[in-house]
Length: 229
Image (cartoon, rainbow, N blue to C red):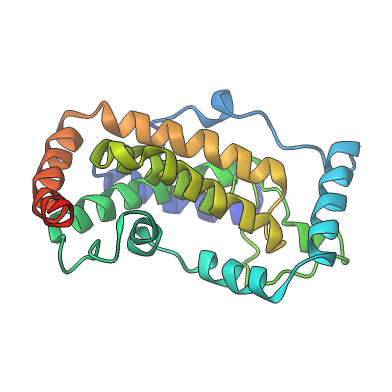
């Protein structure tokens, strides 16, 4: 029998599927792509909780500050750290619009994937875990931040191939700080990486998305030229 939470998610996803810009919520077979998360009473999950508790015990004020920043990150704060402060929605309205639409599709897929397993977040399983950030009672697996940053890294690498390594490192930083924050298990963020990269690759196969991406590339070009001058 489905939980009330799952039924609500299913209803929301049914509506979201009709509003997809590039990818419907069922565009990726998430159950085939990702393994199920470790069982609640498994040794693997207990080991993951031990890792999170150890990170918590050694958490510094600087790490907490970074975790709070990661919690609220968006495309422009994420990318600006790598390519420069000129990367703003004011400078790049077409780019902002494209990634907003891709983000809408990501969000629907994210909710669908979480509903599959409905994994409880670490603080609800182990009272020792004290998150450094605010968190909801939404399912933990896969990590939404992990999906989003990984999707960004792949798509932005198409626009900034010279920054590919740095963009993927920045995404890894997001995933790491979700562990330091105590908001996710290691398997959550790894599943997020896999799904985020799959979403990005599916978007890159969409003809309309590729056309819009080329418009974004042309919008960005003058800023790159100015930076190189």
